[in-house]
Amino acid sequence: MSDNLLNAQPRSDFGKGFARRLRMIDQIPGVFYFTGKENVPLSIDLTTFKLLLKTKPSLIELHVDGLKPRECLIRDLQRDPVTNEILHVDFLGIQRGTKVKLSVPVVLLGVPEGVKTGGGILQHAAKELEIECLPKDIPSSIEIDVEELDIGDAIHVSALDFPAYTFITGAQVVVALVVEPAVIKDLIDEEEGEEGEEGEEGEEGEEGEDKDKKD
Image (cartoon, rainbow, N blue to C red; front, side):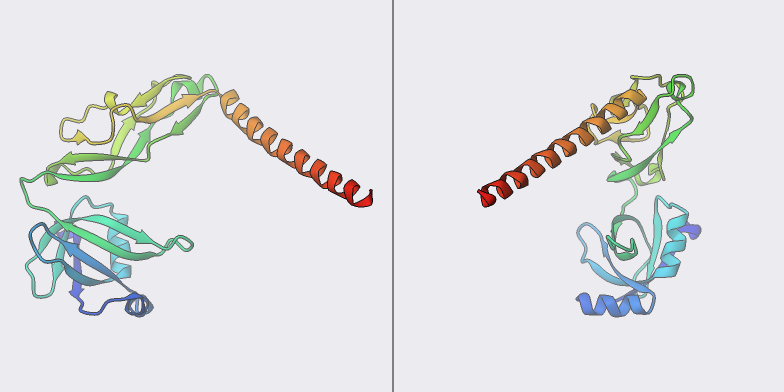
C-alpha cells in the first residue's frame, strides 16, 4: 500500500471562502467517512493528490495527523465544470472482509471485426459500471474485449463474467455496440432536417408579420 499513500491534515474551518483560500495555496478540502465513526474534515496537497490519481489506485492508504492510517477509496470527486480542476474529494473508509459498492471505469480492448471489415462504428455506451466486491478485489478498471463484435452486435452487462465481483448496474444495460455508419448518418440527417424545418417556419412567421404590418 505504500505506493498509494496519501498524507492529509485535519481542518476545523469550513465554507466557500476557506476552500478558496486553500486552493490558493495548492490545497483542496476533503472529508473522510467511515461507517459508525465521526466524519473527519481534511485538507490535502493538490499536487500530491493529482500524482496519486495518475496511478489509478483502487485503494488509498490515508494518513491523517493524530489518527491511525486507514484504507479507503475515493467516494466522490468534485471538479470545476469549466476548468475541470479538482475542488473537493470525499474518502470512504473500508473494512477488510466487508463488501463495498463503487463505480469502476470500463476500458474496451481491441478493434471490433465489424469496424475492421465492415466499416462499422464502435460506440462505448457505458463508461462506468457499478459493482460490489471485497476491498481486496477492487479493480482499477473493467477491461472488456470487443474484437469479436460485428455490425449490429452489442455487449450487455448480463454477458460479463467477472467472478470477483457482482454487478449492481442492470443486466440489460448496453456496454458497447457496433453500428453501421448509415445509422449515424441518418441520425445526423434527421437532426439537421428538424433544424431546417424550424428555421423555415420562423422565416415564414416573420414574413407574415411584416405583411400584416404593411397591410
